[in-house]
Length: 86
Image (spheres, rainbow, N blue to C red):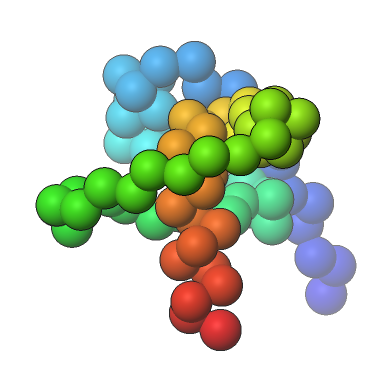
């Protein structure tokens, strides 16, 4: 039996477009292999961290965060969480 070719995911430019798509599409027909797990920020942030860094390091962190499409402070927290979880 030949396996059906999966459709590429369409580009969804808004939450409303995504909701419409999920409500009407058969997701088993789409290639979901490029999806990545997402963490939701649920726990309250009740502590703060202040640190001094060389400007070049901060610039590099900001670039990496921008590549991921997240604020650099969230990126730093993600790095800390990932390291602590190991």
